[in-house]
Image (tube, rainbow, N blue to C red):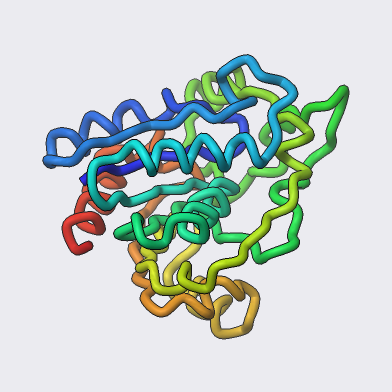
Amino acid sequence: MDILLIGGLWLNGSVWGRVASALEALGHRPVPLTLPGQGDGTASATLDDQVETVLAAVDAASGEVMVVGHSAACSLAWLAADRRPERLAKVALVGGFPSPDGQVYADFFEVRDGVMPFPGWGPFEGPDAVDLDDEARRELAAAAIPVPEGVARGVVRLADDRRFDVPVVLVCPEFTPVQAREWIDAGDLPELARAKHVDFADIDSGHWPMITRPDELARILAAAADAA
C-alpha cells in the first residue's frame, strides 16, 4: 500500500527517512512529502497550498492509500479524508489530533516577518522531548524550517461527512491511549468523537517518534496498513 508521510511544523520530508526505509522492508511504498513552505523554498505558501500537495499525492497513488499526519499535520491528513474519502483506506495520526471546521490550523507560536520560526525547546520540555538527547535537539532545531504565516494561520475547512467513515489509528507517543480516550469522551476532540472506527497504538516516545523510534513507528504504521 502507498503510505503518505506528512511531517508536522518545521519539518520536511527527510525527517521520515528511517521510517520510510523500514516501511519498504515491510512491503509498503512510503511517500514522504515535503510541503510548500516547509522545504521547497516557498515562503509565501498557504495552508491551501499544502492541502493541494497532499491531495495531489493521494491522486497519484496506486489504489487506496493510507495518509499519515504528524502533530499539526494530523489536520492535513484529516483534510485528505474530507476531500478524498473514497481513496483513503486509513488515516494515521501521530502525536496530534485533527482540528474541527473553522479552526485556525497552527497559530501556536509568535509569527515574525511573515513566518513562525521554531520557538526553541522551552515549550517542549517534559514528555514531548524527554527522549531527545542533546545532539538530536541540536540537529532538529538546526534543520527546522520557519512555517509561513499563511500556513500557520490558515483556516481548516471540512465539508464531507464521509470523512467519518475512514478508519483512523491514533498513535500515542507523549500521551497514552487511555488519556486520548478520555479526551474524546469529554468532547475535547470532536472530529475523533464522530469518527466511526478509531484504533489506538501506544508508542513509548516523545513527540517525534520518527526520530527516536523509527523502526517501532514503522511497524505500527505497517500493521495499520495491513489491517486496512
